[in-house]
Length: 243
Image (cartoon, rainbow, N blue to C red):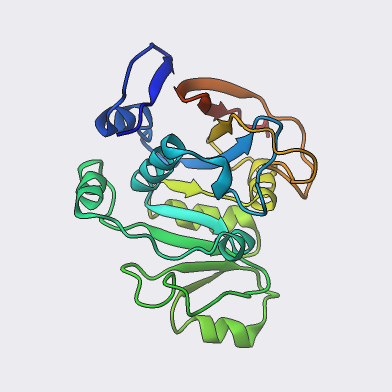
């Protein structure tokens, strides 16, 4: 068991998984949570992928946030870069999901314009839950027809429409990438940001957790802070933009 301590709102030692479930509990109603890991100097990747930035505590939080979501939303570029497949959920994790009101398995929802996806991935080959592919009306029609054999293809005019339909399935966890995050923030669709700050200086080169379309500055309110071996696990409430 890794040693994760709670710093805020109240100090605590050696948190159990049950403690983490309580700390990261999803509030009632529609909720979209984003999870990222970043180096101390703001890099979103190390050697081209995010995995090198996170330690054991980050993996615990990462898996727990998946356990508390009914939909895992991710951009196709992140699926390709991080080598996504459908994860193994142990009987214990599936029981925890059901105990917190979630379905036994989450649905993966992949956002893509080009529909360039590896249909040999375990996301598409016999997953326990059929994935959703969120795309626009200008995506290739022949590729949509091919994807419909192994996924639900959701054609939407804009990201807000897609997220609105996904909310019907339950809480959403977005795992990136940076362009998708910027688009969600710009559209006022994010309720919470969980950001792990890794005690690493990655150096110049890698991008930040947001890239792509610009948006006005958004205020964050610190809702929680955990620590493990110098890594900080922050939890922020995201201020909704005025209409």
